Length: 396
Image (cartoon, rainbow, N blue to C red):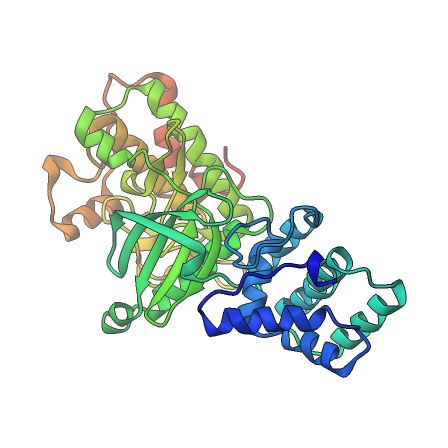
């Protein structure tokens, strides 16, 4: 039997332990030693190794023989859905189902000539044991980290490659000490929650979504879609203002991203060119959900965002608002793409109070060079009255 299940023992004591466990499993399954060995496979290290193998990876240190077929790809979407679950009870149930129905069943069925009755006996034994909630959680070892591609208030963003699939991602690492020092615990947690909400179900191709999340002793790590084409603010500063045709293309994709959020009762609250990233093909995605907010149960009333893009209702203290604020910001962003500055930053003033005052009181005068359709669009988006604003209350 051992000839069909080869093990290469490495230096690590844990890997040697794994080798001993596997060899024990080759003995008759009804023996106490065999059951004890199977039970010991719940060791976190062993499960991490099994996880990599059964997800089609090559980072497992135990070289199974090639004639043992890989398990069905049905397990992949189950693992992905597990990683997005927030409730510990749901994660426990999903982990148990995957472990019982895929990992151990596949391991026993494919690598040993066990009878059906024997497999049922082992399955019954396994069902009595708790499966760790962290069964399929990733670690830094699952990725090869490359150069820094961005920096933020709480950390850096790196390019990275997932070891088992070779796929490239962006790894956003938030430093726990920096978060605590700047009292940013709420912001960091909020970003994690918002990323989970927008990434649930079918990912939106116009939002930088989260595929995985994990933490180390000193960092919180979000694995996001990789966008390596810069942002609209960069391209605006390097190549000058956009023409109407270019603006329409980017506007259409941003609208689809906003609608994806709004259908999930999320108001973004920080729409501006710097937060719109481009991929290698020139398509855009909305990024950085740190200020986003769930308004499904209670509408927000905090004045947050970037001056020159915040809607009047956001600037008005104590006024509750919803997704309406994003459409006003969207109008401000389109204006900047076309003119190079916010409609409320005349003469490029940096006085925040003056910018806010103009946002609350000034009627925007649109240049004659704008087409009739463009003027109509911006006038609708920049309405101070929410009931008349394009995109709100069924308008548009």
